[in-house]
Every structure is written in structure tokens, then in C-alpha cells.
Length: 473
Image 1 (cartoon, rainbow, N blue to C red):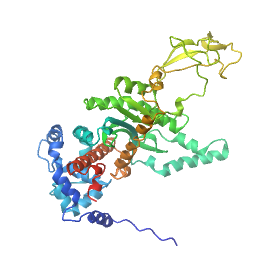
Image 2: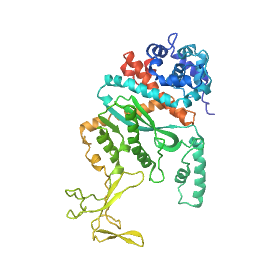
Image 3: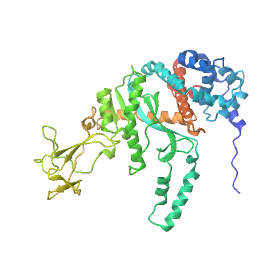
């Protein structure tokens, strides 16, 4: 008989918290009390909105509610009910939050939903306050901005593995009749594009697996300190028009950068950066143009194989930029207008010099007269460069140079930051499916990291800028 696993009891969780209490009060409570004053850090507009929404004094102050939410993240507790049980047992935590009595669970959920915009303003204010600290810590790394997409999986039935298995069983039953049908591919195609409980929770592809999540993009500097959190509410992954899920994710990520960077600089107008670091998903001609021309930022982006065509390339270009036939440099390709496709960069269309376009019964038809065509296409070689192709080809720093390689080695810091927000701070095990509540949780996690930075800086422990937990070790 297999040995049964020990069940985790609430008392065990609390005993782990008590182990951190080496003195009468936990160390992090003393650090919080000595170094953090939320009355100064929180924007006045937040206080005004909190007091004005009821018209009468509240039972719990704004500072108390925010302190409690930050402490919950420090303890890594995703469930509010568990955190409230610990508050009931800990007089020290209640004193830190200035709670005479512990609030009800619903008061925290309403707080996050009602004041999501002000929580975001609080986060942006902390970003502005911590920017000079980042420059003092490392002036070089603070001039680097790095983007990465992430997703917070919602607590919905579609994320239950049994939901996918039920569709897969249908596919297997069909496979018994039609052996050419792939059951797994069938199951993926039948997965709904959004969840029943919340249509804003979309089908996503994150870390190599399908799930239903609220997609977000984080911007961090070279130190790994978060600078911006943005939610991609208007874009979805297009699994139907892409061959693989990885390509759908790359296509999705490439379209998010410009609007998110614009919103970031609209909030932080005085911030400037020298380099942008991004993975291959951001390897898009329009992104290069925006970063170089509009932002004066040098892009350090890993090349994506999807941008490398296996077709024969033009043998050269004329003085006015016209591409030449891949097999005969004496023949110029023919301009055939501008191609504008939804979701793609604007492209110039060049036809094979020995291809003729005619109209037959209202339909376009190509006649190819080349005896030795360079492609199997009936219309010959069509060259489709984007309008902004030169910005990508002429990268300010050569991709094979030592400088480019050393800069790109810094990029994984954003993945460590995202992992810290989702795992130690409890975002990976949330049991909520409301959009505003999920957004608030991510902003509070970002606030917690910035509070950690402020505490570390004020007590001169600059090596612990990533985690309050390491400060109390």
C-alpha cells in the first residue's frame, strides 16, 4: 500500500510564518515601520477618491488596506482567506496594518475592483520615485529597457486539464472512424477562444502550453526593476492564420511593443533609454523603425528565423532602389503597388521582370515567360520588402559584434522578474477570474517589488533589491 502524503494544515503554514519571528516582531515589520511611509508615497488623488466614494469615514484607512495587500504579497499568499486567518492570529501584523479588527474578505475584493485605476497610479508614482535610485545603483543598466510578455492564468473551468481531456476523448472517438484525423489537433481547434465566465480571459500560449489567461507586458530596466505594466486588451493570439502556436505568439508579441511603449512614455515623459532589449518575437521591421527613429533607442533584438526567407533574393538594386532579378542583374523587377494586409507591416510588391499580369473574366492572372524560373510559383518571384526594412537590416550595432552579444546577455533579467512576480508573490496560484481583480493583483505585486527596492536602498543593502524576504533572512 502506498504511503499517503501528509496533508498540509493551516497551522503548518502559520508555523512557517512564526519561524521568521526571531524577536518580538518580525524583522520585515520593523523594516516596513522604520522605512516606509505610505502617506508620502501614495498619490493624494488616491486618498481623495477613497474618502469621497462613501461620504462618511471608513472603518479602515487607505494606508491600512494597502499595507495589508503588500504584506500578503510579501508572505506569498494568493488566497485572501488564508491571509486573514494569519492576521487574526498575529497581533504584530494587525498592528502594522493598524487594524483594530480584521476586515472581511469581500472588502479586499471590492477595494481592488473599485480602485484599480488608483492602484495603477500608485504603481506609476513609485516607478517615478525609484528611477533616481536605479540610476545611483547602476547608471549603465538603468539606461536599458527590456520588454517581455506574460500572462496571469485565471481561475476558470477551461484551465482545468479535465476540460481539454473531455474534448480530446471526442477527437479519439472520431479517430476510430477517420484514421487521418489527429485527435490532439482536433482538440486544440475546438478549444473556445475565450472563457465562459469572463470573455476578456482569452486562449493563450504561455511557456510552451495552452491556457486561458489575461495577457500583459512588463517593461523592466537592466537591473530587473519593473518600470511599466500594461495589458494587451485589444489584441488576441491568432491561432487560425498561423501554422504553429509559437508563430501565433511571436506575431502577437511583435504587435504589442509600439502601443505599449507609447503609453509608457506618455506616463513617464522624462524617462530616456539608450538600449532596448527584446527576444526574437519583437524582430519586426516596424519595431526597429519606432525604436530608432521615434525613440532614439538602439534595438538589441534577437533575429527571428521567420523573417529569413528561403527564396532567392534580388541580385542587387539599382541606384533608385529597384531590386534586380535574382538570376539576371540586367533585369529590373517591376513595381506592382503597395500591399496592405490586416495585422502586417505595409509592404512594397515587386514582380518578376518576365511576369505579366492580365485580367481574365474579372480575375487577375499571371503569365510567366521565363524559361528557367527561380521559384515554382506560376507568377514567378515576388519580392515583398516592408517599408521599414532598412531599419532592421542596418542595425546600429552589428549583431555579431561583442558589444551586441554582451548587451543581449542582460535580457533574461526580465524573465526572472516576471517569475518573481508570479511565483514568490503568489500570482501563479490566484483563484480569481475577474479582470480588474487580476490587474490589481499584478500592480500590487509590482508595488511590492518597488517597496522592496526602497527598503533595501534606505538600509544600504543594495544586493537585496529583488526581494523583501531576503532582507529578513
